[in-house]
Length: 443
Ligand code: TRP
Image (cartoon, helix red, strand yellow):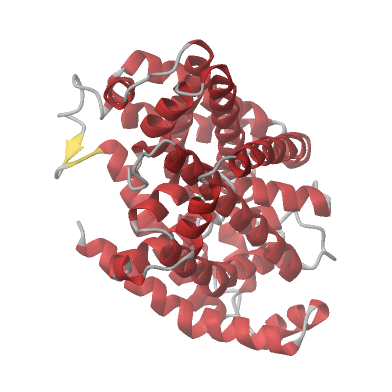
């Protein structure tokens, strides 16, 4: 099997982790929950919960060098074949990719639109965005471009496709974000953004905030869908999986924080509200950029290009668990598996975008949720929590503890192992169970 280089793995895993979740979702959720206190809760969720699952997945992948389904069987104490059903996790990545590709299409459309003109008023910006989400033709066009790019990249495989793309796009992303950060630092409102994000106001923190932070930690680290396990199957055998996991989580967190600082500085500079929800990036920001003339246009184009880069490197990681599953377990060729999985997520993406249109909306709405929202709900609220619980309980109760300990002490101390093991066996499943029950209660 073609392995990543160590740096290739770190960039690819960071490329998977850093995505719309960091640059779009993290800032708007932080804005809705009032800033600083939410950031603290989020950081705790990353360190004590996300990182634990990340390390577990990475260990399983590196140790078994297998697809999700075979990895569970091979790691279980008596090689119990029933663990193959844990392979259900690959469905979540495919489902997320279906609507993620549509959203990336919107962003690509914004890159193109930012070249010509930006809306000067929020009412206009809101109407433009609203119209886009109902415009079937335009969305199909951009969804096709994105899906085609993703399929083209993964067809070439881990090394020639995924590693190469990440080696190019991740440094470019870093350059754009750094440039935007420098510009934000030069503005007066940067200090306001700093205090918004780091001074805690606990009054807005309730159970919804805690669960949002936990859900965000899982999503942003691409956990519980087999992505990190699958990438780790191509991690060199001698690489320190604990250290690489920390590095990737650190990069992901830095990008989220930096994106938050950039976006809040821009919002405060323009006197715009910080709690604008999902429309923050699609409605509030374009209006602000339009007030800055040519510079604003350059910033707008760079910002949306950064989002596309971040999103593409995530998108390719969502389909990979399914590809490895089909090529390993069913001995399909990579081409066949890619065509199969590509057609599935492409078609689901079409269903997702049709479900927002006037013509199809009604027939694609079930129990008050349209198909787009159902795909989001089933993946993020059902499959991902379930995947995390299954992984932790598996590690805690069905894998030989001595074997795990041995793997850890090769690279770190016994203490790190003990902390990780306790977290994964007792604390994380409990926390995720709460998340799960809460989300289901919201049906
Ligand atoms: N982590 C990515 C983001 O923040 C999204 C992502 C990529 C993902 N692969 C995933 C989410 C697998 C869940 C599962 O945008």
